[in-house]
Image 1 (spheres, rainbow, N blue to C red):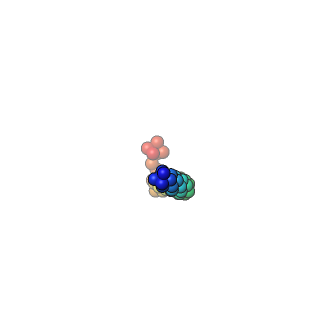
Image 2 (image 1 turned 180 degrees about the vertical axis):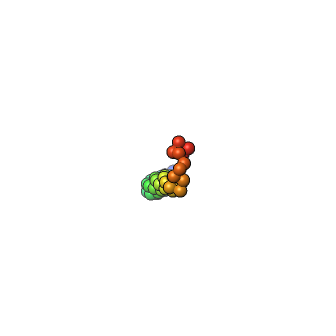
Image 3 (image 1 turned 90 degrees about the vertical axis):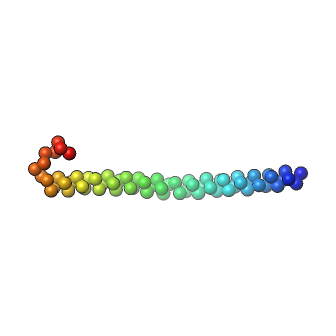
Amino acid sequence: MKAKEELKEVRKKWKEIEERYRMQEELLKKPLDIANKTKKEIEKTIGKLLLHQFMTLNPKLPNHFL
């Protein structure tokens, strides 16, 4: 009987730990998603700026080569 109660306590503790882990994962996922989105936007902006710089330095180059 005592072993059953101990097993129930252990299961209860593991469920609590699992729930805490899940909550922490959700809390960390949101900032990570925001950071990844920001990174993609920055990379896109850098690409546009590089293209603009290239076009400025090579004004005689036809646009169809890009």
